[in-house]
Length: 172
Image 1 (tube, one colour):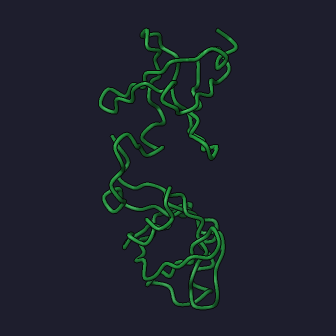
Image 2 (cartoon, helix red, strand yellow):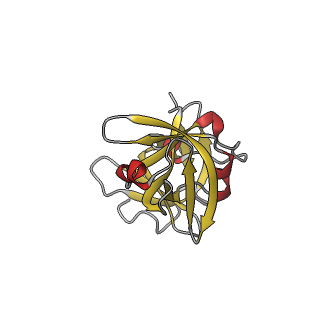
């Protein structure tokens, strides 16, 4: 079952004295953070609900004001905490796009039906994403997410079909 709450960023510092925080956004488009009205601060022991009052930009980060916090001393304890949002509050994905959390754990097969492994992680290189495929008894296989390699993603069956091009797997 899909997680209802997805990670959307991380509080990396406080900003000013009025309870604002500096956030590194983990969304493809930082401006999507502006659409959020409600977030959760993930501490070691709990999820703390908070209301987004304002978002502004500072270089590659966001300065976020949470309605419940008006003082640096109240918010400072959350430095380093991850922020989550309800899946229903996030913008609709384009066709063919998937949340990383939904891809991890999917089974990977070749076009010939041979089992390859399981997606363990997804990295972004700037040019394209890379699927880190964990294989039994072999080194992980890194597959670029390009049309020539990733042929189909079927979320209903939990199956990714790939074409392992020559040179991608030196252990075949």
